[in-house]
Length: 96
Image 1 (cartoon, helix red, strand yellow):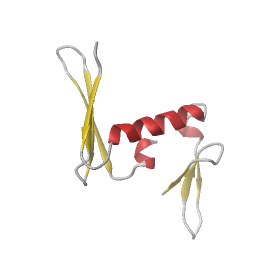
Image 2: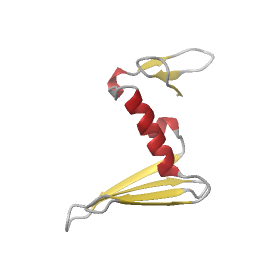
Image 3: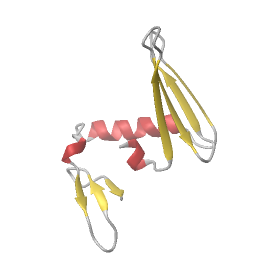
């Protein structure tokens, strides 16, 4: 959902083999970035012109407010005027 809501942001992830910690990076062409690492003390760093992790949290909160619908329940609306993916309640529209 984040990538649909915030196009142009690349997501990368890795797991450290020694202890299993996970790291996620969000990277945008405008120089915005975020890096989050889980573990006993999860930490997030972000910089650049936009706060990408804050955007991710906004999308997560909105999804939770919509009862965490399954992505498989989204539907496509296709038309000559523009096509969209729609949340089950039609309140969330993503251009495709």
